[in-house]
Length: 128
Image (cartoon, rainbow, N blue to C red):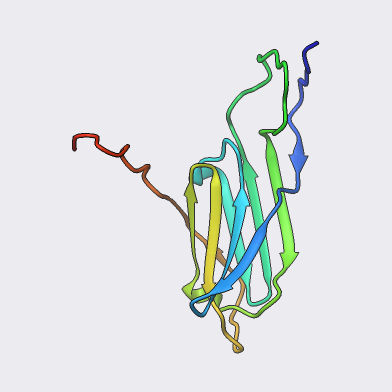
């Protein structure tokens, strides 16, 4: 029995938030996301992520479907104050990581550009 779904979804992705090295990091899985379709806004105590994944799945006939691709929206209060002006965001293998130094002073809300981390070559592969 196949699982069929023909419409795009908007969901809240899970998030892991961790602290270390004087910074706060949030890891957000965004299956199918591309940096050009991910928006990150960061305030001293708040993180907002909006992503539109363009990988088309409507034509697939699934036999099992545990994860979805579609629209993602995350808006959450951070457990600690950060400095948005020194934040960075990377997308690697479908996981967005937003990092910002801890700061009591905070700063204004700002948009953070998302950069893609190039995939590493497999071990033993010859350089191109």
